Length: 72
Image (cartoon, rainbow, N blue to C red; front, side):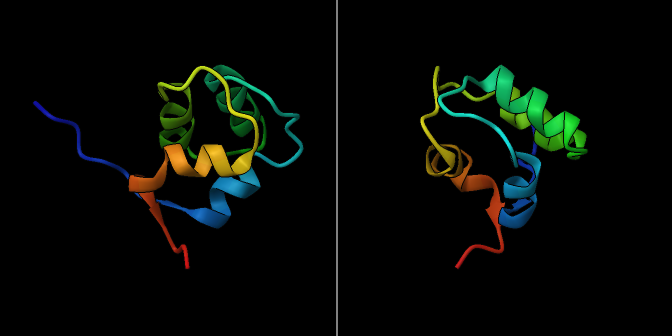
């Protein structure tokens, strides 16, 4: 059974990662998002990302690309 992808607002992702120091791995992203009050679906998506390290917010957004909404 395939999981349905959850769509995240770009602004919500940015808000959830506010104050994080790059480079970081998926675990640190998920922990920061959780401490910033992010939705559990976003926390799970961040912790499950395949890339080992992210050097900035653009790398995170690129990895979440198929799950983002509200981007211009």
